[in-house]
Length: 339
Image (cartoon, rainbow, N blue to C red):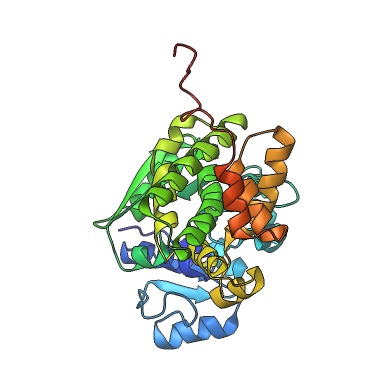
């Protein structure tokens, strides 16, 4: 049981799932959302009318549109805002956020700066303690209490312990890491590959193909992350291969569903409209491709998805190009010089 109030900023699927988990563990949760009608519906019915439909919400959740109320009442703050809205929403509260412990749960990258969400939080509130929560955590399964594990990563060990205390339960296991950059980067990058996996599934590609996509995606993610200074071993854990498997194999993944729609011949615009939620991978692929080009990092899958989404290349053209590329080493960090 946690007697201290906790704030969750965001009324989407994952914000609601985390708020429900915290509340079930005994925390009083102030869940902030922008929409007054959404707040009213939750208060009156005990359900979120837009996200996680059918999941009853714990009575310890206090929905509100008053950001100042949520932040003033809470020392620990989980940030579950879309990447495109995070900076704008939080900048007016920078001084207050400086005194908080902030946990980023958003798996995205800011387009203009290529900054991760925790880096933006630290920029807004330089004195705050900041951590990252990431892993194979499909929101509905978390809300339905399916057995789940996640990672809390921060350079502040006491912050990791506090998050473990308030979130850890019978169905939700929380591991700790000090590589917050690698953990967060893994969570952002895997969204791109989930779109590719959705395309492959819609085209009824075989299990050999799907497993190849996932393992080559892991190779690309790790290669890129190491170039930026992350620890490659992080990608063998929950925030790397764990999250990649979950989002590349489940129709519950928003990015997978966008890819599936593309594979069925839908336009990107109609796929996003049908989804009705933010699919971070759509934004990430553009900034990731630009950064990979700048750093000269070999990322053929990212190049392929970019060609489909933004250059109007057909899926068949792109697949043919991928299969015709020169084979590289299987694992970048194992030398073949002794062969």
